[in-house]
Image (cartoon, rainbow, N blue to C red; front, top):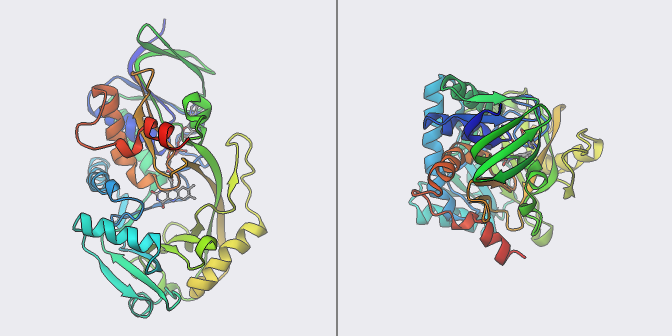
Amino acid sequence: MRVTYDAIVLGVGGMGSATVYALAKRGCKVLGLEQFNIGHDLGSSHGVHRIIRLAYAEDPRYVPLLRRAYELWREIENRTGERLLFITGGVDAGLERSAIIQGSLRSCEEHSIPHEKLDAASLHRRFPGYRLAKEMVAVYQPDAGFVLSERAIIAYVTAAQTMGAEVRGRERVRSWVVKRGRVLVRTDRASYAARKLVITAGPWASKVLPLLRKPRLAVPERQVLIWTQPLRPEHFRLGAFPIFVIETPGGKKANKYYGFPIYGFPGFKFGRYHHLNEEVDPDSVDRSCRRRDEELLRKGIRAYFPDADGPTMAMKSCLFTNSPDEHFVLDVHPEFRNISIAAGFSGHGFKFASVVGEIMADFALEGGSAEFDLELFSVTRARTSLL
Ligand SMILES: Cc1cc2nc3c(=O)[nH]c(=O)nc-3n(C[C@H](O)[C@H](O)[C@H](O)COP(=O)(O)OP(=O)(O)OC[C@H]3O[C@@H](n4cnc5c(N)ncnc54)[C@H](O)[C@@H]3O)c2cc1C
């Protein structure tokens, strides 16, 4: 006999764990299905933590979601008694005319977000770990910081279970089908039925949802992170060093880097967006880290954070899932209204996981979100303008 659920959540990573929690909080009988362990290092959410920032250079329309995301990170902290959100302040840096500086200022101005503009020398005086080129400027925003991504997944699943949610690890969804208004989901262990299905499959999204394949709305890409032991650790400690996103000078050859103060590993964490531009299959990607990866990252560390250029402590590979315009896909399936999708987070999604969980619960229970304008994230936006 099949058990019938109000909702099944396919994929219990960053977005799925928050969705299982949000659905359980609203009294739903919910099942979360995860192909690997609950909390694993084969998807997009591992490597200790993720940046959260309010001065959103990508588009000011993200700011209302961010404000709610901050509130909801505090909610899950209070519910579990675990600290997940750390405020360090944040730096967006680049040339005056760069997309990052102009975008960051635009979000601050449109949404009255407190911020300061600093030249390279003032930033260095205030945070000596930073050595920007003298023609670069920075927007400092005091509310930025990081979220403990690995711990957040565990916190959400644990809190959801206390409210009656069922979560099954090491169980891969093989297929789903909509029949007479219900969704039937077959895994490598069993079959389940539900009124709603929420797909939060990260890098595997286009494998489980053909709709995302044309146009290619969720393309997995290999990324690499490094932790180096700073030569001057006092400049990179928590409390002395804000998180950052830097767009370097160089026109089309510009690099975009991001990084964190020392936390979780004995080192400064540093990465480059679109590391080697390697599109991959999440089931066959080589997850090892090589000398070439390290050299590429060290080039950026030497140029902008020379006092962090000490011995390597750790490296990890991870996966982005890119949409063509690097905006998310948050929508109800255009054909099957009882299926909703959270995908294509394009390397900047985790900070939103808390609010994405709430939005996916709105989609599953109300058919849409009354609180947010989500046009930027619609599948149809993507299908018409991105072809
Ligand atoms: C190196 C790196 C740095 C990043 N930095 C930041 C940052 O600083 N700030 C930020 O906000 N974002 C950042 N991101 C992006 C952010 O981490 C992702 O957007 C976010 O983790 C995506 O979460 P997800 O739930 O979509 O994917 P995942 O957490 O990977 O979850 C998807 C889950 O679905 C499961 N699944 C898939 N298919 C099936 C199936 N058939 N059956 C069962 N289970 C299935 C997977 O196993 C996985 O657990 C970064 C990403 C990377 C890789």
